[in-house]
Image 1 (spheres, rainbow over the protein chains, first blue to last red):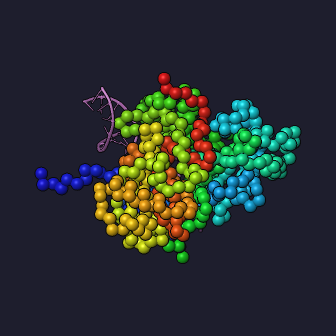
Image 2 (cartoon, protein in one colour; image 1 turned 180 degrees about the vertical axis):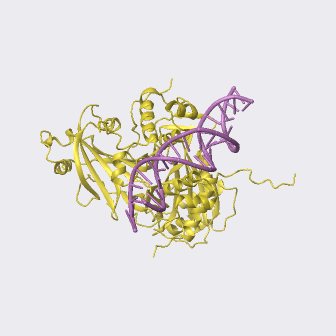
Image 3 (cartoon, rainbow over the protein chains, first blue to last red; image 1 turned 90 degrees about the vertical axis):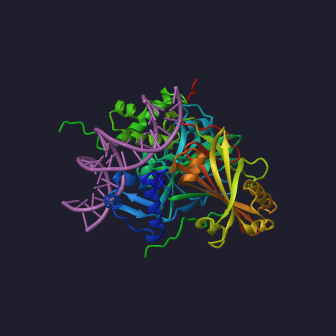
Length: 253
Length: 253
DNA sequence: TAGTGGTCTAGACCACTCT
DNA sequence: GAGTGGTCTAGACCACTAG
């Protein structure tokens, strides 16, 4: 009866581990520093490697760690703020936007996109692939879906090698009057193609930003942009430049 | 040498499993339907339970499945669109906003918040806890940080039970002229307190929306709202009501 | 080739929810 | 108490990177 009855809520080991590691990261490590390998860390904490990995996975999800196969685990820099929605709404492809066109094709859009475009299920649309780079790192991959009806002057055009046509499509699009746009953010996991472009493994968590562009009373284009969730903080509105971070942090020397 | 040399890219089992399950979910299951338990499913696919779980975890991350301990795994309904940023920017707590005040206290904010408030590290601020419910389900938990300087008329007030004081703080806040706001979205994992309020396990993925409110040339308040990433799609801009979803879907009868 | 993280297994026990 | 998902173990092998 005299036994100290604490531990009524036995915290999972990986959770406790995560807490300990977080504190260590805040106080004893610098950005870019390499952690001991997983087998050593597991042994040091007296847990199985799988358990240790559960903690590391969470820390990676939170943007505190970066793990690369064949290399090791490093302390991640603070997330970069990526401006997504400025107040000035504009068409994709206008001068000075953050994206770079990497290709284009014609295909039927996925059903969810077809629904937004109010197009038939078998109707092919222009698909422009773009990518976004920040600080030398790829942070997002985008697929832009543009029905032929939005760029009528290109209806009978041949396919000149991809990126040239992409530019043509974007140019035509910008002739339309943009009436408004509509944005949604949700969590997803990277498809194989996106993962490759983002330099991550397939299935890694991403923030999916879906933007609908309205013109002529219709949905004239849909953009599905896939941002690396580990390294990105999506910012909306006026500023977005101010650093937000967790705790004490120093740069690696 | 005549052997068919495919399989040069051996897809991980859990990834293939996920694909198979996704297709099954699209074609053979209805929203709300209960899946076989994990041990049966693993046996059926001829994999270890851990491998099966890796696939299920991803599907839950993508909002396709809902798993509850002691109950089972069910097919999740499409994510609900949750309006986060309407064009009309306004103070928290105005009539008709989606939040319900659940309490308040005074404490020192976490360092990241203190930095945004440009307040000293040891300076206590008002903290108002609010929660947001949609379709009978809790979808978000919020912590509102309001420095005493933003609500000067409350500086010497006693603590009348929490929620009454919270209302007072919000009322005072609304007397200030709102000059603008600033929003960021990033991925996080639920802290223990949030997890409980959101009816999830600690560590489950959440979308963290940080909003800064500007008034009098300063940051007058900071809101950190934690949304369930599995069930929510954050919408910004004009509409936000239109359903987006993956594929064929029927309601359970 | 050595060392890293990624995948996978076959088992065990625990916490929880229902009936 | 029976059945579910959640945690944990100790091992094995694979894919990748770099010296």
